[in-house]
Length: 322
Image (cartoon, rainbow, N blue to C red; front, side):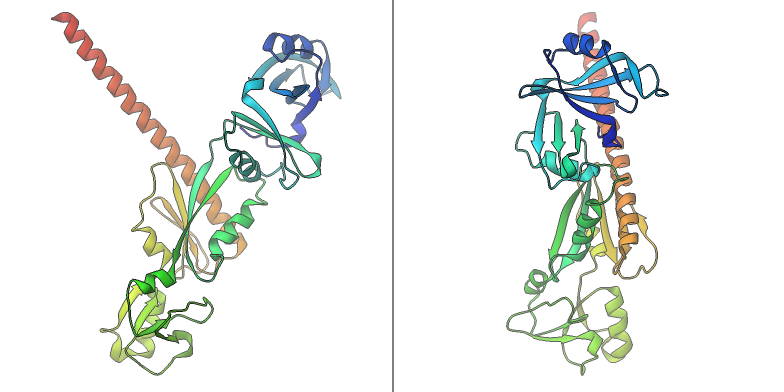
């Protein structure tokens, strides 16, 4: 749980014990600001998270009608992180993930002194598959930058999956490599390197490129179209060879797409040179897909557990009958 707006979260010192009955008496005896829903109650160095139900929101200050402790002092910790914007769910997730043994509730006092919390973190895990160089891997870098400003996106964890093209080339030794362009900055020690976008003189080379590179190569070098060897570096093609853990999704890219995104099984694909707008749309789609896959996986496990329990019950019943 992460409040959509941190203005619904109050941080206050209380002169009572932080057990549920004491907190209930304390808050039921007073009014609160009409927008307040959660209170981080502090007594010295101990904290508890409380949810309030109010009589209404029409007046500036309203009566409290119900109090529920969401996290006890043993389950709550406060961290000061002035680098964290507490309005951004994925930044709150990062603050909690940085703790070695994070409790159920992590209260973050972040940028501008604003306070928010993350309770029972259940991040959507999106693997971001890209190739490099150049470094940093562009799509991974774009996703991280989007996550730093995505107020409307639920807490999403970026899991980089970066394939090193220089290592790929090293596993396929050749005396001459043909690369798509100089922009990547790929180096292959001990080998000659040419660049497809410069249309070099035809040679006996190994093409390090994707389907689009192959089509361009075959256009300029039709006599070698059927014989050139190739290492396919398309991230979308590589994704198909790299299974994900159940309940998780992936975001990657492909140069065969130009102005739209596609969902292929557990993978969302954006264009190779995607703008931040398209990357944001792709990330949102991958995050939603991750949530759907996680829910389905949890349901599957619950059904398996129920089936196992039914099986044990049947065995016990048969045993009792005999």
